[in-house]
Length: 84
Image (tube, rainbow, N blue to C red; front, side, top):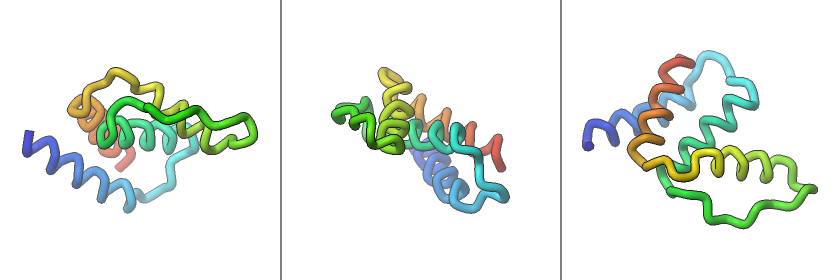
């Protein structure tokens, strides 16, 4: 478990130093996995139609609903490694 947390923290640091900026769908996936790994299931109210960015982020986080923190951390690590 400590290894997973260390690898997750390293992946978070590496996500800020990617050679290329990922496309928006990939950025949303990164965001959703990060939020699921750190905060658990989305309990926030869904933003209104006028808040397009907030709504996209909410949907990305909510897409991971039910995924355990450890599974989300591993998926985040795998995604960042695939982009590096």
